[in-house]
Length: 247
Image 1 (spheres, one colour):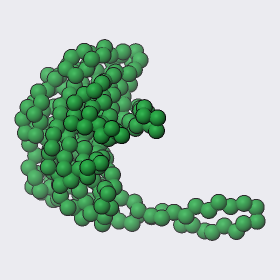
Image 2 (cartoon, helix red, strand yellow; image 1 turned 45 degrees about the horizontal axis):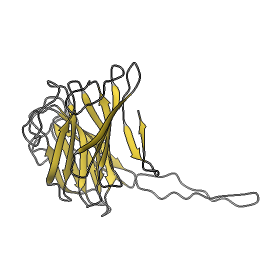
Image 3 (tube, rainbow, N blue to C red; image 1 turned 60 degrees about the horizontal axis):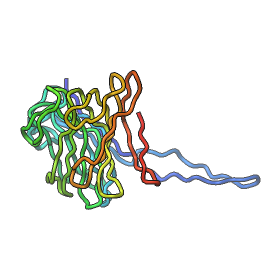
Image 4 (tube, rainbow, N blue to C red; image 1 turned 180 degrees about the horizontal axis):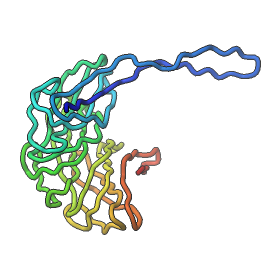
């Protein structure tokens, strides 16, 4: 069976009217699909994150097992279930401008992408790979996944990447660039103190939040949770300089 990434961007203007007694209202049509694109290759391709770029186009991140087929122009580095990060940049009409397969000999899961203040991009997720391909770090968890963050230029060239985790399973889900030029990362961890994990987990799995500087050096990290299982999915910096986490 052939699986493909199905990616639709919905662009529409919606008119909202503030009305009071005696004010006539206008009939407004519901938003519709402006355009859509189907992107993928001959194997499994899955999308998880999209952001509009400063040029009006879009940056997409997911993962792919495909090689040299369909819209996939690269060759995967390896993997059995998810393959490599698949990063795709399109123009405002959805035409592909460039794309990259990023990973090592085992599976990578691409979860979150954002354009950075310098016009480049940061991609974040998880890797099972161990110091091969694009992954320079050593796997911390004996084939369990680790967080993997990749900083790229505006044309998709890797500027730096970091693998971080502990002896358990560390699954990266969300990244945001912070006001100081660094990065805040969130996901889920079953690790105890080991590798980059400095806290003792509270239950089976905890939220693991990591703050990095602009070059990927960890400034602090924290495990948050209770006696059972917590999974982290979204993080944002708040206006007071703190952070809000969701899971």
